Image (cartoon, rainbow over all chains, first blue to last red; front, side, top):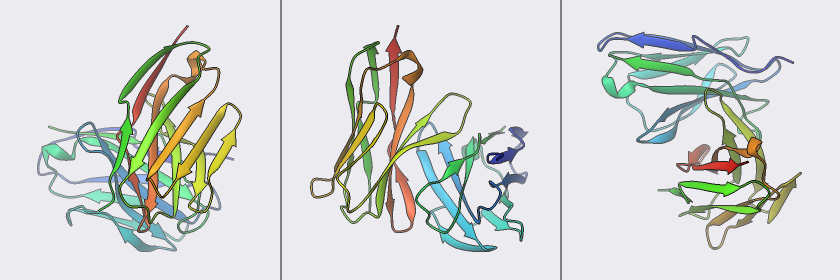
Amino acid sequence: KAGVTQTPRYLIKTRGQQVTLSCSPISGHRSVSWYQQTPGQGLQFLFEYFSETQRNKGNFPGRFSGRQFSNSRSEMNVSTLELGDSALYLCASSLELRADTQYFGPGTRLTVL
Amino acid sequence: KQEVTQIPAALSVPEGENLVLNCSFTDSAIYNLQWFRQDPGKGLTSLLLIQSSQREQTSGRLNASLDKSSGRSTLYIAASQPGDSATYLCAVDSNYQLIWGAGTKLIIKP
């Protein structure tokens, strides 16, 4: 069974641009969570989607948004990029909402110049 | 507000030693606590999950304990190997989201 895939793996953008990251969960998994990892703040929860609905959201500004499609694939969008948005963005999938075990993708490394 | 702390931030030990990694949290109202490892350039791998009603979980050479009342968890690694070198993170499920520690970077010297 294929694992969680994230595209692209690396991305370079400039301040003010917007970016869309994609996550394909493990087949059969219906919940997708997104996390941001930076050296200064560590890992922080962004949001969780289940059945195409955002079920929970972390403490991030409205520039960070996401969506989930009927096939459980998810996208995350960051608008008006700031230098501080440079981070590793990780996606995790699980069978159900708030399932015990989450399976992580390799992440997308975003650099904002 | 839930806060998770991991001590030490880094640890280097010779191969074969047993070791303990520590994780503490400020709010005992947790759903579960999880230990992960992160290898450079890769995502996170779930190691052990302890439900709030449990005291410990074991997988191979790994044993994790949970003491909710004191807000502490430990990850015990027996007979360490160079392949155990990685960053170990603990996370607590609190209010429907995972709150993470900063991690312990573990180096096992051959």
